[in-house]
Length: 121
Image 1: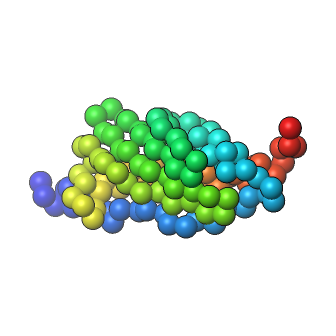
Image 2 (image 1 turned 180 degrees about the vertical axis):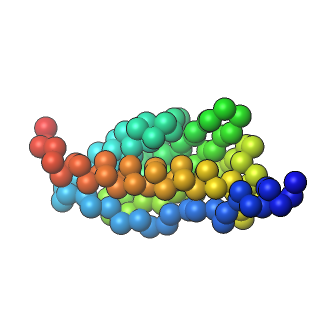
């Protein structure tokens, strides 16, 4: 049984200082709103936001992850805060978690890049 657990786990993927393609003059609030939209599009629930910091959770059946997204107008980072039923041991986690984070990372970069196509109010 231990083999099956190890075979399904990977090093925790925590994107750090991912570059954002933010149009000049974009506010921190606009970046935060884009991150919120990206999270929602990937079935994350953004439960708490402050300028430069978002907290999001995702629950799939009995599996749950809570992450922190730190951001500014140039970069963002995603850090795992807690995991339930994801075989988390401090350094490794179920491979599905990493897939969730990769999709969230892609959604954030896409959503922020789309700010360039939205005319300012």
